[in-house]
Length: 427
Image 1 (spheres, rainbow, N blue to C red):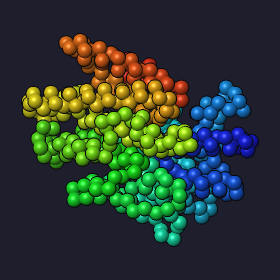
Image 2: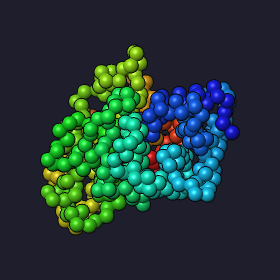
Image 3: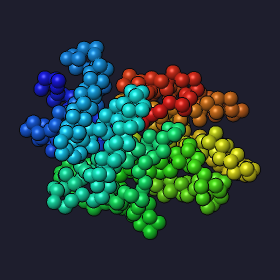
Image 4: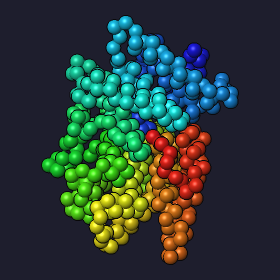
């Protein structure tokens, strides 16, 4: 059963402080709270929200049973969804889509990979059944329209993050996404409308992303590139241009690298992410993590794209498949770029910890593990400075993973794995 009202309300507050927009955006907060006050939200959705927020709670109501409460709330949510959905003449709605997606994240990060993977697929099919990949009906008010867009793009991001695991191919094709990208958060909060480009327009050579996308849209764009990197480097589905060696200007590698260079212009990579957050995310003297979360996460994804695309071991596998000798200049540049981005990733984690931003998103564990795996390659480097920096970054990545492990079970596995083996599934 649902907890007492005051406990429920505190968990809802925690959800919007620590989960919303970090990186998934499922609700228009004001509308959600109004429906909550009117008791018009289905219980299965409330249970899913409470389960998502529970991991960050220290409410004495739960004592030492927080983990049990997460599992219990998620289980109750799923039971209610099944009973409602498979009832007579019942069709899925946006609430079911939101709840199933949240439950898939809970399952996957808790190590229940098979039910989590199936629920992700289910949420994708529900979203498609609701036509969420299309522009929403103009009969809806602006906040409802944008909420539906954000639900779809959250599922899209989740799908791309999952594709970084082996035998976990992405299910959503970019060519089937016809709606515009998320608008900026303040416009959304105010219930206003703003035209933004579609995914295709954002990556179009003619459009060239002339208008700066919102920070949440940058999460979507970097997730799209991440999916391409995973398909090229991890899944290595070698067809067409993928058969060309990475150093060929017509190869898929070259195409992805070009997109990353295009995307780079939208990030302020020269300075501290903390400075960007201070300038853009301060509200009443406090950092608004709904605004700051996408800034941090999109930068982590951008660096991760480079690390996957140019990871020495993955590039070595691709070169073996092509059966041609790797040009030394290409190899040296790729290694340098990979290392630089791994270092930047580790510095981002250090800054997050130093500044105290609660940016402890589950997929950041994957990013930290990937960066650490690259640093291990330089622990015996002939250059003593490179060797020392690699050791420092490796230690700091492990510390960051330890902080994540207090909230995410998959991070507990990562921090225990020797040399951070990449066999674990993460989202």
